[in-house]
Image (cartoon, rainbow, N blue to C red; front, side):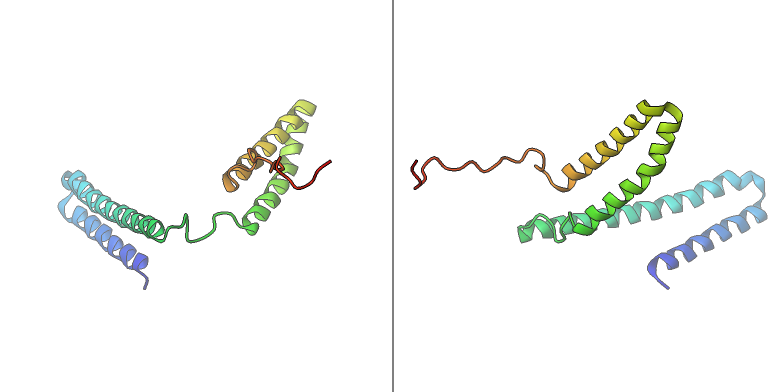
Length: 145
């Protein structure tokens, strides 16, 4: 049993105990029992969020200590290829809907959205992609005219 399954089992036991107590004590204690159960769920969620935050903080500290931006590259060929394929596959129904409902203007709006999403993805995965400066040849060259 994994840690998640064990916690789920514990939570199910808590819920069953709460329901059993409700049957035994009656409706007058229902809100108190529900509040108690929700407090336990809230504590579990808080604990999980805290563990996750500590883990992420530790990972960030490790990255900083190593002096690199990330242990894994954020931009892979597979991610770019997959995003491009998904964009093209979704472009078909979006084009049909936009063109069918609003004809040419609808088609143009659909494709503007598709292009916009791809531009945002390109700038996210390749910062400076559109603002890249071209290498200017040096004026101090050995070549003379």
